[in-house]
Image (cartoon, rainbow, N blue to C red; front, side, top):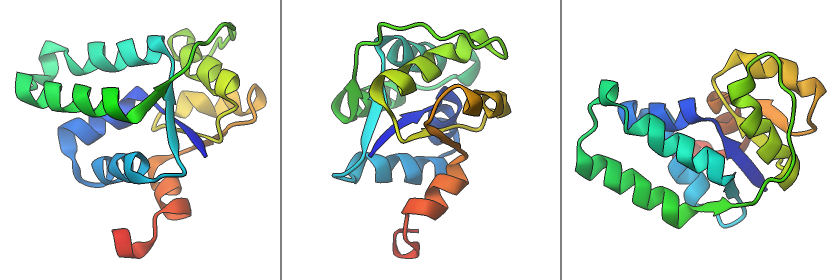
Length: 138
């Protein structure tokens, strides 16, 4: 299974831990799940996590950057998708299309309109958790 993770989910995992972190760690540990990103998405992850407003210590940033480098699958995306609802989110749709991803995990309601554009299932973190993570892991 191929999943795309929106930046807001990663930020929640890093800042809050709890459910978002558990789900991401499950994705990383699952042999049958690939966390897919494009170089543009990886750059966005790093840029957002490095913002001064979050005040993340350098050792925590390094920890998460190391997790990303070891756990994600980077693909080249050579197509452009026009997503008028939120043009900065087009990179996630482009990646989903290029990877033929099964799921896009997001907390962003702007993606509700994208269901008409891609076949990838767009789900919330809790929906993904309920679909794939057994209670024994929770």
